[in-house]
Image 1 (spheres, rainbow, N blue to C red):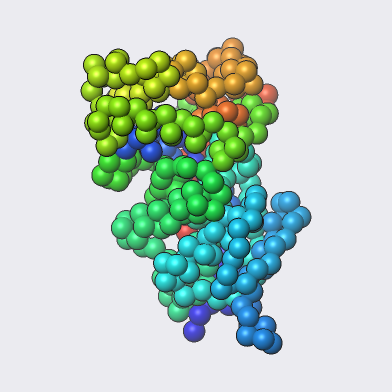
Image 2 (image 1 turned 45 degrees about the horizontal axis):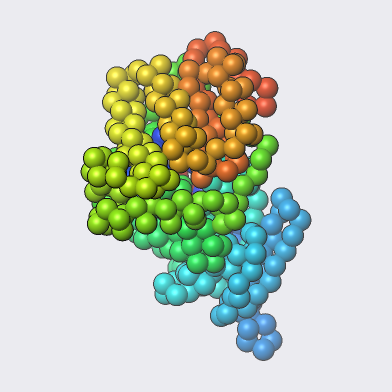
Length: 357
């Protein structure tokens, strides 16, 4: 017997360091946060004419959608995520039921905390579990979770129009309390790394500038990296030689420089964490932000103001997070250093999971 009611939770994420490296087959060090998206799914009977409908309600927005399970059509905004998730699950062969979905969350959209990946993953888990026999078929092995991350990325790429990589979805699916994840995007190997904050705190400051990856310069940056690879004759910037990069034309040279140096900063951040060198981690955050601003050109005046506010408040380091072009910045604050007004402390929390009926 399938379930009649299911709840699933998926967290947002903060990327400690390693920005715009995922789609370049590089390294990143994200962690899942305790805030995220919850989807409550309730099975519906087919209509009198046999059609199976999906009813979706975005509780935080007070908006609804309804469509046929067999043929979800393109839409915009949050509806694109729901319809795309249903379509990709159907294409992948998951048995789905007609369903009523109630979506709610406490991770702010457009703030660089990956509310979109949290939505995709929570929808997937709820719909898969709802359509499965009791006992569940939600992904349990690493391979199953990685496959689900790829499915969610297709939703974002093909239905929403943002050419994102796998970082956000993998962080949401593999996250664990008090743990960051070193992800190698060439092999998709994921290594848990303890995040020993002690009396230190990580906090995000909202720049007040919302972003949409589908309409920002994010896709342009991906295209620039792809062009750099063509000119260098490599499959990804992970394979690029630093000396060859210097022969690229202006903007492409800067983009590639950032990717190569950011990969090294991920390695250095892991070393700092293992040595409990949090001041050193703060310095790496500052270096990452400078590279994102000066070489990758994804910062904005609003983000710069937020970084300056974090540093002026005593942060050991601060940088923009997410795709840039708006959103939030991350600050690392030492013991007894008060957080600036409006800052939101973030802590690594558990990954996506089915809560139950």
